[in-house]
Image 1 (cartoon, rainbow, N blue to C red):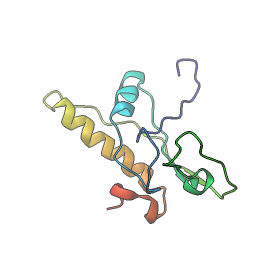
Image 2 (cartoon, one colour):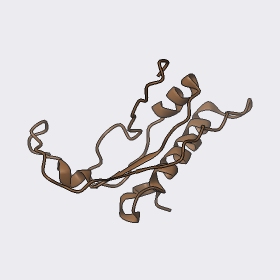
Image 3 (tube, rainbow, N blue to C red):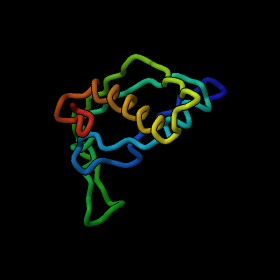
Image 4 (cartoon, rainbow, N blue to C red):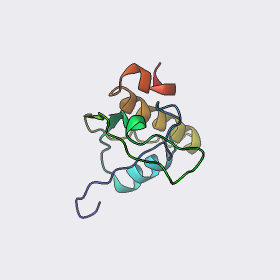
Length: 116
């Protein structure tokens, strides 16, 4: 990132079994704060058909032909944490902001817990 390269981070930390968004993890917040760089939200739909999860034999998933839709949103900076704000609550609030920005780029059936 210091050399100007982009890094793609999936804030959920794993593949969703339901093909919709699941709870994001706080690591993206730490990285964004330390690097002081904007986040570019990207919504990806259709990967559940491209490489379905194989629960019986993890690591043996196969690729299939599938239409995948990628939508790139507007970059944004995470909000600053106020001096009196609890760190954990700040991180939880901020990951919801990040995930809702991603959800806004997806069709309703892919928004998962961020679809409200």
